[in-house]
Length: 585
Ligand code: BG6
Image (cartoon, rainbow, N blue to C red):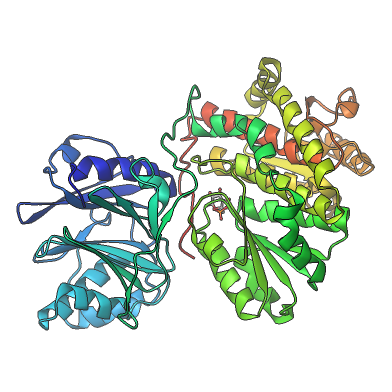
């Protein structure tokens, strides 16, 4: 709500949010006492439909990642009321959607879409028909919704915007004579760095004359706690690259070092907490899950800390053994991943202290943790995480070394490593990878062998190729090969082995010999020392700096997945069915 042409502002904001979900979208504008909206499937673009939207200074918009109902125009948001007196957008899942919908159908309520969102709209209409104001109807209905949900509503009658948050992210951007509401700060970052971070069950009421925040459970009005964002991301662009992914892969020349920009004093509170904790659990989802594994490896093997990594979505099976003297370290690029937030909330209920390592600013995960650290990698737009993975690992290596009072040595080693990372982006190195891709792009099955410090690198490498090339790729410990996976190896099957300058690499060499004997196309990634070994049909050298070197062993897999995706004509930055921040369970 402001003085500018809302549809263009909302369009730009949605484009900056598109990485969070991109199967369909919609914008609603209030103009001359009427709500006009346009919805479409596919990429957010200024097409004829968009042009039909009138000029107006108030509006709401949404980009969708389907949870209930297929990718259709009808299921896209906003969902407008029968009387067209309000329209609604939602981020989350109404977990009791089925029973709510059944009770409405019993009242002969009919639906246009298959979404849980429209159920909310219908419930509000029923409250309205009882004579309640839209605001009171919203509050009463919202309290009946189960699960993590955030909704925003455009009110035609009063030219207002209401929004209520529970779990799913929502922030207010306070500008000069304009106010923004959004799922993350990135979307309105070019216009203001003044934000209000909202708690669960906070409601926002935006009127031309005022901005109100209050809690819907006790109706207590809250002060407008406006915070200044540390960094304001004006431009999010690919620079000279065709895709954000390639730009973000090359950014690692700087971001690996940036993540280690913490001295002993800044780390001390966490170092003390680790020293007095019984056990350290490290959690994350997707790529952040594999980074958790790498950090647990560093803590066990460098600083002999009893550290264990857990995938956020599997924390429940550990709850029975969690004790209050345990420490939780949570990793997240977006800071809003629902599974990770839920795990943190449960560990806190057990009395555990929580440390978070997040990339985005002003997020839920940072706000609910006792110790906050940041990867400082800048916005990561490509859905497949690259620079934030190596940044998370770099921070973990620094933490483990700092526990051994080797903070300065660690920062020197990381600086050397990031300097040498450049070698992976030379014309010769890139061509070597592109020629390999020409050789393997027709294969539908590939395997990656890793061991010890490279085990989680193998898992992450496989995820990268899966995420954007849609190929079936499995990463696993070399030791597992003979216990089953080797049955899948046939003539020409690409099998990668990751080799550091350490004793475990001999196990990788013998594993590669076994698959070679069954006709596999064998690819080595790692130390120059093994480059001339004839068991490899292909070899990619990576910088070696003792254990810290394992971090950059993932970069060739990032590049292979990138060139595979380009070769196969996939949408590199927005792969099918994925989203950058999964705010639903
Ligand atoms: C996925 C992203 O949706 O969520 C991955 O595509 C990411 O890149 C994973 O690793 C976890 O997200 P986050 O934001 O908690 O690190």
